Image: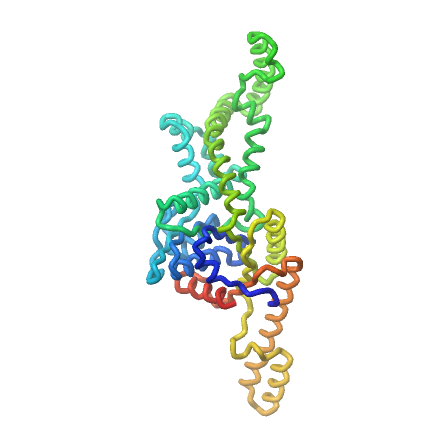
Length: 390
């Protein structure tokens, strides 16, 4: 790679580094990278919490959080604490996070009523953007706890959803604002409020006009949705109006923090065409939004052994032919394998360099492909070591 190497340990050791965001397409090892960075930071003396919003829960499995109740950060076993660090891990539970928001924003009786609303479960489980909204909320909560000193962590590492939705949670405040300001939501929120244009009309007349307008719309909606469902939706919107109002302000605060010093984004990819295209999109998006990019991580890369890295594919091929002619078939076969790996490594390096393009100032780190999946702290430690010495 001709790009600069990543000074990973300097970044992790810097107490000013408070948030690391790992983003990338699905299947490139983004979750593994986030967990590996968290393990290395903890073992170098940082107090860390890692949050995954990947619904595959692979990070939970890697860190031993395979049973339920992973929404709240819990200590991770097997991490060396000799340098004074620690590691907690949590998996985003969008429903639990939304429930907690409701409990905090509303009186107990009203909160319980809202959560019993038959439409609430559908919204919490499948409403477009709910996971991203709750990821932003959870990140904000973890950051706030760290800054206040109330939590046993100081550094937050976040694993984002796969593909181009990886940065959707950054847009959550603006998207939610557009939703809450939408005409339908406004109507459902305050169906009997007179419109501003009727302010000069006597209250009784304005009320009749407004009622006729909203009543007509409600009649149509009543036919489409059914009266009971319409009332449920209306009650839900009115309740969530209070909940999301507070969320939006907190999310804006968190968004601003992600663009400030102390936060850094790590784009994770693999040396494959589709993954590289997604990585380029993310790099361009981060640059456009002036969000700090720490590095591009190429996962599952072809990495030659240090002692053989200087031997090129052509030279290895020539030596293989000589050895084969002399009857040293095994040695010749090893050299031919090395030649193939050297060609693959060179092609991957060229592909990554082509991806960087205008982003050639970005640091690049690689993690070698492994014969088995990373599934424990020991393997995560090895991945982090690869990234640190790239």
